[in-house]
Length: 258
Image 1 (cartoon, one colour):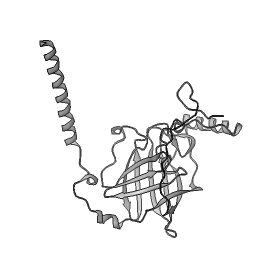
Image 2 (cartoon, rainbow, N blue to C red):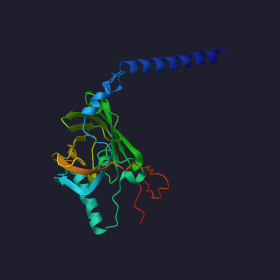
Image 3 (cartoon, rainbow, N blue to C red):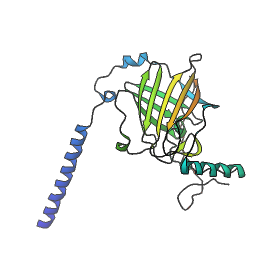
Image 4 (spheres, rainbow, N blue to C red):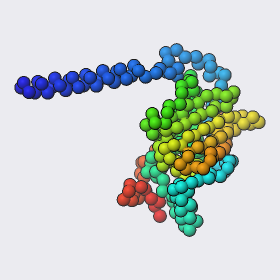
């Protein structure tokens, strides 16, 4: 019984120490304005009207061509050659595992986007797979890339330049689609976005991307996507992994079901 009591005492000490350390860590975290006790919703009235649902204009993509390097260029050329030889070939991607496409693909899929403004933060809802992205606009700094646990959507910090939202994103997971099928990113990808309403048609929204990735691209890659607004639509529920029937290979990668 004495031994058991000693063990229990030790366990309690470990748990209490862990709880104390976690509490101290929470206290040491900065409290940014978006989460402050008092905020001004009046500031939102000064922002442009992005209400409604935004649908990508399919085929309306502008920009330059990517200048790929190294193994990323080799893979892209090999995959495009397979597609040319067999139009039914499907380039393997993690999204066919029902993993979220993440950034930047989340912003360019042929499904609806919705922007929700709150003080110091913008939430983007993507209908496909019900993805959610957060863009902090409260003045916080962009974290160092080494301080971020890589995730599908990265860490996004934005600021307003007039009616244009300028966003920088880092910390996306390596190996996600970058721009088009067959191109994937490294852990050093940095995404810059400029989002703004068309000056002649307020029901058109432009997103200008600049992708910078020194392991994938010889120079920054620029693309512009355009979206059209509908004020009557609503985002629908979209569940990917229900009844997924793609076959899986020995590496756990799903393949096209021919």
